[in-house]
Picture 1 (spheres, helix red, strand yellow):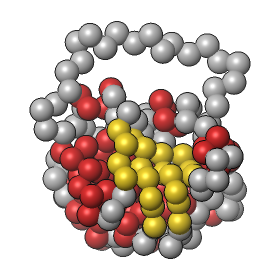
Picture 2 (cartoon, rainbow, N blue to C red):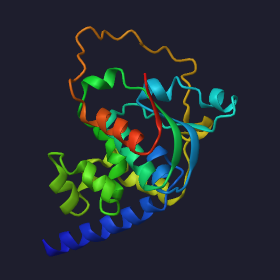
Picture 3 (cartoon, rainbow, N blue to C red):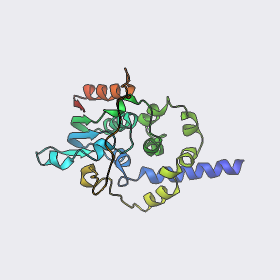
Length: 219
């Protein structure tokens, strides 16, 4: 048992050290490992933001822009990403939040949110954001548990590619990811979707923007 605990602690340390040095694999690690960025426009949201807001169109108008939309993400992740930007002293003039379908959802997306977990012990912002989750105690206190539970996202394969500093295309096109030659189904039936009377994470985003004099635009 002692040997197992020691191995788990060592592996947890190694994985975390590698992820703490990464800034070219995705939008979350890029934000975590950059500071003092200046943007006229930051775009947040799910795939509807990621695949449809062309950042270059804003740039062509003289507005420094990046699309931080994350396919599959919910407002849980959008709020936390904006909090990290504030923690990293980003200067942002406008936030465009694609919120439509996610207003009816107050839960996290396990896949996207797992990308924040390597920073659980290093960032008070990440820790606090996850603290009300049902599995927080296991994620925080059991060594290497988070890397095992979300192996498909932050397990060995991602650890290996990150250690080699192998880039992805996620940050290309200023974060915009076009759906080229793909037949997507955008005809979702949203009749039964009802926005929550109080969506915690939507309200958090609004408050962050207000407190930091950021013009907030929800679409």
